[in-house]
Length: 92
Image (cartoon, rainbow, N blue to C red; front, side, top):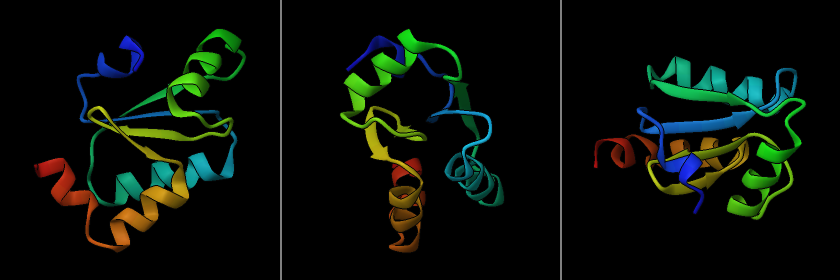
């Protein structure tokens, strides 16, 4: 795992682009739940985007970590919340 991912003061770190609809939806979900998160923009930063792709194994955004656990993108984040697993993960 990249040191970049583990450096967050927040429990949730999300790598996004500005206008991606899934990034907007992920931000909205976290905000509605009152969850603090660090939003790291990868727009125009090919090196950072490459690091995130390598760490996550995914080419899309958002890519979301809770602590050192890679949750995935918005779809996985929403599913984790719907299954009741997100808040316990944060409080764990």
